[in-house]
Length: 187
Image 1: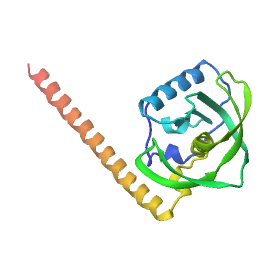
Image 2 (image 1 turned 180 degrees about the vertical axis):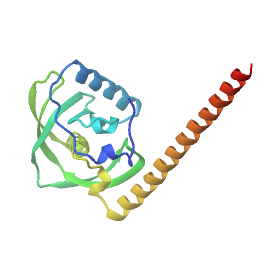
Image 3 (image 1 turned 120 degrees about the vertical axis):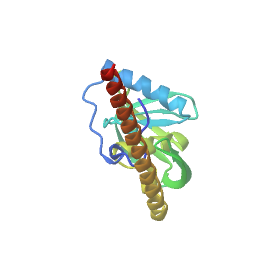
Image 4 (image 1 turned 60 degrees about the horizontal axis):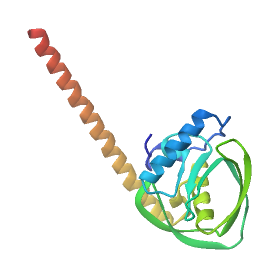
């Protein structure tokens, strides 16, 4: 499992509900927590690991591991507050984003049990940020349009270079294999 970056189309698609909370989903949740912690993040949504499922994991400033399966934000406060956000799928990019200070969310936990959570502060912000991923949005969509355009263009160039390097590596491996096969047949 690895984190996908801006430019990967999965980040722009709306996720589908998790049909059943089973061992496969729980295993995915455990992997997501490990990956998020390793990457020093505070939240990670399934689309960020290439899975179009309505699921995300969070560890906020209280160090409690929280799982949100098929979440629905059912209430938000009128008071909007700014905060500099970043994202594991858009590394080294930060922008001040306005979001509601408080929210109420309904979801299922990793056991498939429904719960309702009222959150504020950093936890509310992380939940909203991760929820956006389930809707095919990233945080720069909520910020300055010029900043978004420049960021997307930069990541498109990076993705193109990454694909070119992967193609070059594949061609090199094919040439080496062909050369070896030719040498083996001459023996």
